Image (cartoon, rainbow, N blue to C red; front, side):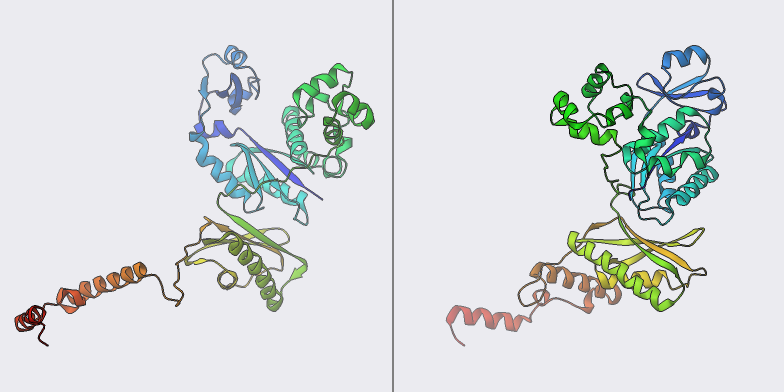
Length: 395
Protein backbone atom coordinates (compact mmCIF):
# COMPACT_ATOMS: atom_id res chain seq x y z
CA UNK A 1 0.00 0.00 0.00
CA UNK A 2 1.29 3.44 -0.92
CA UNK A 3 1.72 5.80 2.02
CA UNK A 4 2.84 9.31 1.13
CA UNK A 5 3.37 12.15 3.57
CA UNK A 6 3.13 15.79 2.49
CA UNK A 7 4.61 18.40 4.80
CA UNK A 8 4.29 22.17 4.66
CA UNK A 9 6.11 24.42 7.12
CA UNK A 10 4.14 27.35 8.46
CA UNK A 11 6.24 30.44 9.14
CA UNK A 12 9.15 29.10 7.09
CA UNK A 13 9.87 32.25 5.07
CA UNK A 14 9.23 34.63 7.95
CA UNK A 15 11.69 32.74 10.16
CA UNK A 16 14.52 33.44 7.71
CA UNK A 17 14.09 37.20 8.33
CA UNK A 18 13.77 37.02 12.14
CA UNK A 19 11.88 40.30 12.22
CA UNK A 20 10.69 41.90 15.48
CA UNK A 21 7.81 43.64 13.70
CA UNK A 22 4.86 42.24 11.73
CA UNK A 23 6.28 40.80 8.49
CA UNK A 24 4.69 39.47 5.32
CA UNK A 25 6.42 37.59 2.51
CA UNK A 26 4.41 37.86 -0.70
CA UNK A 27 4.42 36.36 -4.18
CA UNK A 28 2.16 36.93 -7.20
CA UNK A 29 0.26 39.66 -5.32
CA UNK A 30 -0.73 37.29 -2.51
CA UNK A 31 0.57 36.56 0.97
CA UNK A 32 2.94 33.62 0.89
CA UNK A 33 3.85 33.63 4.57
CA UNK A 34 3.63 35.84 7.66
CA UNK A 35 5.27 35.84 11.06
CA UNK A 36 3.40 35.37 14.34
CA UNK A 37 2.92 39.13 14.88
CA UNK A 38 1.25 39.49 11.48
CA UNK A 39 -0.93 36.40 12.00
CA UNK A 40 -2.18 37.87 15.27
CA UNK A 41 -3.69 40.61 13.10
CA UNK A 42 -5.53 38.02 10.97
CA UNK A 43 -3.01 37.90 8.12
CA UNK A 44 -3.06 34.46 6.48
CA UNK A 45 -1.40 32.70 3.56
CA UNK A 46 -3.24 33.28 0.31
CA UNK A 47 -4.70 36.65 1.35
CA UNK A 48 -4.58 39.30 -1.41
CA UNK A 49 -1.57 41.52 -0.90
CA UNK A 50 -3.64 44.69 -1.16
CA UNK A 51 -5.87 43.54 1.69
CA UNK A 52 -2.86 42.61 3.82
CA UNK A 53 -1.32 46.06 3.29
CA UNK A 54 -4.58 47.72 4.30
CA UNK A 55 -4.68 45.75 7.55
CA UNK A 56 -0.97 45.81 8.32
CA UNK A 57 -0.10 49.45 7.80
CA UNK A 58 3.48 50.12 8.80
CA UNK A 59 4.42 46.44 8.70
CA UNK A 60 7.21 44.88 6.67
CA UNK A 61 6.52 43.45 3.21
CA UNK A 62 9.16 41.35 1.42
CA UNK A 63 8.86 40.02 -2.12
CA UNK A 64 9.76 36.32 -2.34
CA UNK A 65 13.02 35.29 -3.97
CA UNK A 66 14.47 31.81 -3.95
CA UNK A 67 18.04 32.44 -2.86
CA UNK A 68 17.51 33.88 0.69
CA UNK A 69 15.71 30.70 1.80
CA UNK A 70 17.88 28.08 0.11
CA UNK A 71 20.01 27.34 3.20
CA UNK A 72 16.99 26.92 5.51
CA UNK A 73 15.34 24.65 2.94
CA UNK A 74 18.41 22.42 2.87
CA UNK A 75 18.46 22.25 6.68
CA UNK A 76 14.89 21.00 7.09
CA UNK A 77 15.15 18.59 4.15
CA UNK A 78 18.37 17.21 5.63
CA UNK A 79 16.41 16.46 8.79
CA UNK A 80 13.84 14.58 6.68
CA UNK A 81 16.61 12.36 5.25
CA UNK A 82 17.15 10.97 8.75
CA UNK A 83 13.64 9.52 8.60
CA UNK A 84 13.16 8.57 4.93
CA UNK A 85 15.07 8.27 1.68
CA UNK A 86 12.53 9.14 -1.03
CA UNK A 87 11.95 12.90 -0.79
CA UNK A 88 10.55 15.16 -3.50
CA UNK A 89 10.53 18.90 -2.74
CA UNK A 90 7.40 20.76 -3.85
CA UNK A 91 8.22 24.33 -2.82
CA UNK A 92 10.92 25.55 -0.47
CA UNK A 93 8.57 25.12 2.48
CA UNK A 94 6.96 21.83 1.43
CA UNK A 95 7.81 18.33 0.20
CA UNK A 96 6.44 14.85 -0.41
CA UNK A 97 7.99 11.97 1.54
CA UNK A 98 7.36 8.34 0.61
CA UNK A 99 6.87 6.20 3.72
CA UNK A 100 5.46 3.15 1.93
CA UNK A 101 8.36 0.90 2.93
CA UNK A 102 8.20 1.85 6.61
CA UNK A 103 6.66 -0.62 9.10
CA UNK A 104 4.81 2.15 11.00
CA UNK A 105 4.55 5.21 8.71
CA UNK A 106 2.13 7.09 10.96
CA UNK A 107 4.45 6.91 13.97
CA UNK A 108 7.42 7.90 11.82
CA UNK A 109 5.51 10.90 10.45
CA UNK A 110 4.60 12.00 13.98
CA UNK A 111 8.24 11.78 15.06
CA UNK A 112 9.36 13.77 12.01
CA UNK A 113 6.82 16.54 12.62
CA UNK A 114 7.87 16.80 16.24
CA UNK A 115 11.56 16.83 15.31
CA UNK A 116 10.97 19.75 12.92
CA UNK A 117 9.18 21.70 15.66
CA UNK A 118 11.92 21.00 18.21
CA UNK A 119 14.81 21.89 15.90
CA UNK A 120 13.43 24.84 13.94
CA UNK A 121 10.51 26.09 16.03
CA UNK A 122 8.23 25.76 12.99
CA UNK A 123 4.80 24.19 12.72
CA UNK A 124 4.76 21.37 10.18
CA UNK A 125 1.29 20.73 8.76
CA UNK A 126 1.08 17.13 7.54
CA UNK A 127 -1.19 15.33 5.13
CA UNK A 128 -0.96 11.59 4.58
CA UNK A 129 -2.56 9.59 1.78
CA UNK A 130 -1.97 6.90 -0.78
CA UNK A 131 -1.29 9.41 -3.56
CA UNK A 132 0.62 12.67 -3.83
CA UNK A 133 -2.28 14.93 -4.75
CA UNK A 134 -4.56 13.70 -1.94
CA UNK A 135 -1.75 14.07 0.63
CA UNK A 136 -1.20 17.65 -0.49
CA UNK A 137 -4.93 18.33 -0.49
CA UNK A 138 -5.22 17.01 3.08
CA UNK A 139 -2.40 19.29 4.21
CA UNK A 140 -4.04 22.27 2.47
CA UNK A 141 -7.33 21.60 4.26
CA UNK A 142 -5.68 21.23 7.67
CA UNK A 143 -3.74 24.47 7.06
CA UNK A 144 -6.99 26.32 6.33
CA UNK A 145 -8.72 24.81 9.36
CA UNK A 146 -6.09 26.15 11.75
CA UNK A 147 -4.35 24.23 14.55
CA UNK A 148 -5.27 20.56 14.34
CA UNK A 149 -4.11 17.68 16.57
CA UNK A 150 -1.42 15.69 14.82
CA UNK A 151 -3.23 12.42 15.40
CA UNK A 152 -6.26 13.61 13.44
CA UNK A 153 -4.30 15.27 10.65
CA UNK A 154 -2.42 12.03 10.08
CA UNK A 155 -5.49 9.81 10.36
CA UNK A 156 -4.80 7.01 7.89
CA UNK A 157 -8.23 5.43 8.01
CA UNK A 158 -9.68 8.16 5.78
CA UNK A 159 -6.93 9.30 3.51
CA UNK A 160 -4.90 6.13 3.03
CA UNK A 161 -7.26 3.20 3.50
CA UNK A 162 -10.46 4.89 2.30
CA UNK A 163 -9.65 7.90 0.09
CA UNK A 164 -13.17 7.91 -1.39
CA UNK A 165 -14.62 8.62 2.06
CA UNK A 166 -12.19 11.51 2.54
CA UNK A 167 -12.95 13.04 -0.86
CA UNK A 168 -16.71 12.47 -0.99
CA UNK A 169 -17.88 15.74 0.58
CA UNK A 170 -15.20 18.01 -0.90
CA UNK A 171 -16.00 20.49 -3.66
CA UNK A 172 -15.58 19.28 -7.22
CA UNK A 173 -13.10 22.11 -7.83
CA UNK A 174 -10.66 20.35 -5.47
CA UNK A 175 -10.19 17.51 -7.95
CA UNK A 176 -6.84 19.02 -8.96
CA UNK A 177 -5.49 16.27 -11.27
CA UNK A 178 -8.39 16.92 -13.66
CA UNK A 179 -8.02 19.57 -16.39
CA UNK A 180 -9.50 22.97 -15.35
CA UNK A 181 -11.85 23.10 -18.35
CA UNK A 182 -13.22 19.68 -17.41
CA UNK A 183 -13.78 20.85 -13.83
CA UNK A 184 -15.76 23.84 -15.10
CA UNK A 185 -17.91 21.59 -17.24
CA UNK A 186 -18.52 19.21 -14.33
CA UNK A 187 -19.74 22.11 -12.19
CA UNK A 188 -21.90 23.34 -15.07
CA UNK A 189 -23.45 19.87 -15.31
CA UNK A 190 -24.42 20.04 -11.63
CA UNK A 191 -21.73 17.91 -9.96
CA UNK A 192 -21.01 19.87 -6.79
CA UNK A 193 -18.86 17.40 -4.85
CA UNK A 194 -16.21 14.84 -5.69
CA UNK A 195 -18.54 12.17 -4.34
CA UNK A 196 -21.15 13.17 -6.96
CA UNK A 197 -18.59 12.65 -9.71
CA UNK A 198 -17.44 9.30 -8.30
CA UNK A 199 -21.01 7.97 -8.35
CA UNK A 200 -21.59 8.74 -12.05
CA UNK A 201 -21.47 5.66 -14.32
CA UNK A 202 -18.46 5.59 -16.61
CA UNK A 203 -20.58 5.51 -19.78
CA UNK A 204 -22.31 8.74 -18.74
CA UNK A 205 -19.00 10.52 -18.19
CA UNK A 206 -17.66 9.17 -21.45
CA UNK A 207 -20.58 10.74 -23.30
CA UNK A 208 -19.52 14.17 -21.99
CA UNK A 209 -15.73 13.89 -21.78
CA UNK A 210 -14.71 11.14 -24.17
CA UNK A 211 -11.37 9.51 -23.40
CA UNK A 212 -10.83 11.79 -20.37
CA UNK A 213 -13.76 10.14 -18.56
CA UNK A 214 -11.67 7.24 -17.23
CA UNK A 215 -9.12 9.62 -15.73
CA UNK A 216 -11.83 11.81 -14.16
CA UNK A 217 -13.56 8.86 -12.54
CA UNK A 218 -10.31 7.34 -11.32
CA UNK A 219 -9.32 10.60 -9.62
CA UNK A 220 -12.75 11.05 -8.05
CA UNK A 221 -12.47 7.58 -6.54
CA UNK A 222 -9.08 8.35 -5.00
CA UNK A 223 -6.87 6.95 -7.75
CA UNK A 224 -4.23 8.60 -9.93
CA UNK A 225 -1.23 7.43 -7.93
CA UNK A 226 2.04 9.10 -8.89
CA UNK A 227 5.33 7.89 -7.43
CA UNK A 228 7.36 10.23 -5.27
CA UNK A 229 10.62 11.06 -7.05
CA UNK A 230 13.83 10.74 -5.03
CA UNK A 231 15.06 14.27 -5.79
CA UNK A 232 16.67 15.16 -2.46
CA UNK A 233 19.51 15.01 -1.71
CA UNK A 234 20.47 15.63 -5.34
CA UNK A 235 22.84 13.18 -7.02
CA UNK A 236 22.17 10.46 -4.49
CA UNK A 237 20.41 7.14 -4.21
CA UNK A 238 19.58 4.80 -1.36
CA UNK A 239 18.75 1.25 -0.47
CA UNK A 240 16.94 -0.17 2.54
CA UNK A 241 16.52 -3.53 4.18
CA UNK A 242 13.85 -4.25 6.80
CA UNK A 243 13.96 -7.14 9.26
CA UNK A 244 10.97 -9.29 10.11
CA UNK A 245 11.83 -8.98 13.79
CA UNK A 246 14.52 -7.54 15.99
CA UNK A 247 18.09 -8.38 14.92
CA UNK A 248 20.91 -8.69 17.45
CA UNK A 249 22.94 -11.57 15.98
CA UNK A 250 26.05 -10.26 14.18
CA UNK A 251 26.07 -13.11 11.67
CA UNK A 252 22.52 -12.27 10.57
CA UNK A 253 23.46 -8.61 10.48
CA UNK A 254 26.47 -9.29 8.25
CA UNK A 255 24.30 -11.27 5.85
CA UNK A 256 21.99 -8.27 5.69
CA UNK A 257 24.96 -6.02 4.93
CA UNK A 258 25.89 -8.32 2.05
CA UNK A 259 22.37 -8.03 0.64
CA UNK A 260 22.44 -4.25 1.03
CA UNK A 261 25.88 -4.05 -0.61
CA UNK A 262 24.69 -6.22 -3.49
CA UNK A 263 21.80 -3.84 -4.17
CA UNK A 264 24.14 -0.85 -4.06
CA UNK A 265 26.77 -2.52 -6.22
CA UNK A 266 24.27 -3.54 -8.90
CA UNK A 267 22.90 -0.01 -9.06
CA UNK A 268 26.38 1.51 -9.33
CA UNK A 269 27.42 -0.91 -12.05
CA UNK A 270 24.22 -0.40 -14.01
CA UNK A 271 24.57 3.38 -13.98
CA UNK A 272 28.40 3.39 -14.16
CA UNK A 273 28.55 5.59 -11.05
CA UNK A 274 30.68 6.00 -7.96
CA UNK A 275 30.54 7.85 -4.65
CA UNK A 276 32.74 8.55 -1.66
CA UNK A 277 30.16 9.72 0.90
CA UNK A 278 28.00 7.12 2.63
CA UNK A 279 25.24 7.62 5.20
CA UNK A 280 23.98 4.63 7.15
CA UNK A 281 20.80 4.93 9.23
CA UNK A 282 20.13 2.36 11.93
CA UNK A 283 16.42 2.00 12.66
CA UNK A 284 15.42 1.06 16.19
CA UNK A 285 11.99 0.73 17.75
CA UNK A 286 11.64 4.31 18.98
CA UNK A 287 14.56 6.13 17.37
CA UNK A 288 17.10 6.22 14.56
CA UNK A 289 20.87 6.53 14.59
CA UNK A 290 22.65 8.10 11.61
CA UNK A 291 26.28 7.44 10.81
CA UNK A 292 28.12 9.36 8.08
CA UNK A 293 31.54 8.81 6.59
CA UNK A 294 33.62 9.97 3.62
CA UNK A 295 36.08 7.51 2.08
CA UNK A 296 39.30 8.31 0.25
CA UNK A 297 38.64 5.67 -2.39
CA UNK A 298 35.31 5.59 -4.26
CA UNK A 299 32.58 3.02 -3.73
CA UNK A 300 32.08 1.49 -7.18
CA UNK A 301 30.92 -2.11 -6.79
CA UNK A 302 29.71 -4.82 -4.43
CA UNK A 303 33.10 -5.40 -2.79
CA UNK A 304 33.79 -1.74 -2.01
CA UNK A 305 30.19 -1.22 -0.85
CA UNK A 306 30.40 -4.20 1.53
CA UNK A 307 33.75 -3.06 2.95
CA UNK A 308 32.36 0.43 3.53
CA UNK A 309 29.22 -0.84 5.24
CA UNK A 310 31.24 -3.11 7.51
CA UNK A 311 33.44 -0.19 8.53
CA UNK A 312 30.33 1.85 9.31
CA UNK A 313 29.09 -0.95 11.61
CA UNK A 314 32.43 -1.52 13.32
CA UNK A 315 30.76 -0.08 16.40
CA UNK A 316 28.12 -2.64 17.33
CA UNK A 317 24.58 -1.20 17.79
CA UNK A 318 23.46 -1.05 21.40
CA UNK A 319 19.80 -1.77 20.57
CA UNK A 320 18.06 -4.44 18.49
CA UNK A 321 17.71 -3.33 14.86
CA UNK A 322 14.50 -3.10 12.87
CA UNK A 323 16.06 -1.96 9.60
CA UNK A 324 19.03 -0.44 7.81
CA UNK A 325 19.10 2.39 5.26
CA UNK A 326 22.17 3.24 3.23
CA UNK A 327 22.44 6.38 1.11
CA UNK A 328 25.25 7.33 -1.25
CA UNK A 329 25.69 11.08 -1.66
CA UNK A 330 27.34 13.14 -4.41
CA UNK A 331 27.13 10.26 -6.85
CA UNK A 332 29.22 10.94 -9.96
CA UNK A 333 30.22 9.14 -13.14
CA UNK A 334 32.84 6.49 -12.51
CA UNK A 335 36.37 7.30 -13.65
CA UNK A 336 37.50 4.60 -16.04
CA UNK A 337 40.97 4.11 -17.62
CA UNK A 338 41.02 2.83 -21.19
CA UNK A 339 42.97 -0.42 -21.37
CA UNK A 340 45.02 -1.80 -24.29
CA UNK A 341 44.54 -5.38 -25.46
CA UNK A 342 47.68 -6.33 -23.53
CA UNK A 343 46.08 -5.09 -20.34
CA UNK A 344 48.43 -2.11 -20.03
CA UNK A 345 47.25 1.44 -19.84
CA UNK A 346 47.43 3.69 -22.88
CA UNK A 347 50.67 5.44 -23.86
CA UNK A 348 49.54 8.85 -22.70
CA UNK A 349 48.65 7.43 -19.29
CA UNK A 350 52.07 5.75 -19.02
CA UNK A 351 53.81 9.00 -19.92
CA UNK A 352 51.82 10.94 -17.32
CA UNK A 353 52.61 8.33 -14.69
CA UNK A 354 56.32 8.34 -15.49
CA UNK A 355 56.47 12.14 -15.44
CA UNK A 356 54.80 12.22 -12.02
CA UNK A 357 57.30 9.65 -10.67
CA UNK A 358 60.27 11.60 -12.09
CA UNK A 359 59.09 14.85 -10.54
CA UNK A 360 58.65 13.20 -7.16
CA UNK A 361 62.21 11.77 -7.20
CA UNK A 362 63.71 15.09 -8.29
CA UNK A 363 61.83 16.90 -5.55
CA UNK A 364 63.18 14.54 -2.89
CA UNK A 365 66.75 13.84 -4.12
CA UNK A 366 67.53 16.76 -6.43
CA UNK A 367 67.44 17.33 -10.18
CA UNK A 368 70.64 15.35 -10.81
CA UNK A 369 69.33 12.18 -9.14
CA UNK A 370 67.49 10.87 -12.21
CA UNK A 371 67.19 11.69 -15.89
CA UNK A 372 65.30 10.30 -18.87
CA UNK A 373 67.24 8.66 -21.66
CA UNK A 374 66.62 11.52 -24.06
CA UNK A 375 68.07 13.94 -21.52
CA UNK A 376 71.49 12.20 -21.22
CA UNK A 377 74.45 13.99 -22.89
CA UNK A 378 76.95 11.63 -24.54
CA UNK A 379 80.71 12.28 -24.39
CA UNK A 380 82.10 14.31 -27.32
CA UNK A 381 84.15 11.32 -28.57
CA UNK A 382 81.02 9.22 -29.06
CA UNK A 383 79.24 12.07 -30.81
CA UNK A 384 82.16 12.46 -33.29
CA UNK A 385 82.30 8.73 -34.02
CA UNK A 386 78.53 8.61 -34.63
CA UNK A 387 78.77 11.58 -37.04
CA UNK A 388 81.74 9.93 -38.86
CA UNK A 389 79.82 6.67 -39.21
CA UNK A 390 76.73 8.43 -40.56
CA UNK A 391 78.84 10.35 -43.10
CA UNK A 392 81.08 7.53 -44.43
CA UNK A 393 79.06 4.43 -43.69
CA UNK A 394 82.05 3.01 -41.83
CA UNK A 395 81.10 0.69 -39.00
